[in-house]
Image (cartoon, rainbow, N blue to C red; front, top):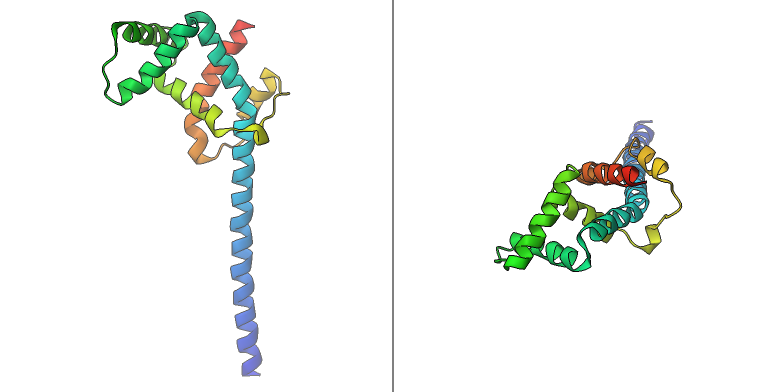
Length: 157
């Protein structure tokens, strides 16, 4: 009888460990699904927002301004033209309640997405509603600049 109890206890313990592991895997799967949904739902909107900026600044100014953000972060000196373009971009973003850091986060959203996750059939309202869904902790940093970008897009229409 004692041997059967030991076997039963060992089996129960093993089942509890398996149940715990299944719960962990389910949580990981849910987080991956949320991450996929998050990036795929927002990639096109970020691109649309960046196109708004490009149209306001002009292609050349945009390229110089975008490059200047990275150069400043690396401690490189900007030419006068690069500094002017950077200032123009900063002023434009200021008007939207955004910073160059917000812009870089938006660009990371695009970079973290790929064709596999790409959903481009959502309306602006559907994407805004998506922000009511839980966002994985490591992706929450992207939410504020995305919401601001969507506001700018919504006002433009």
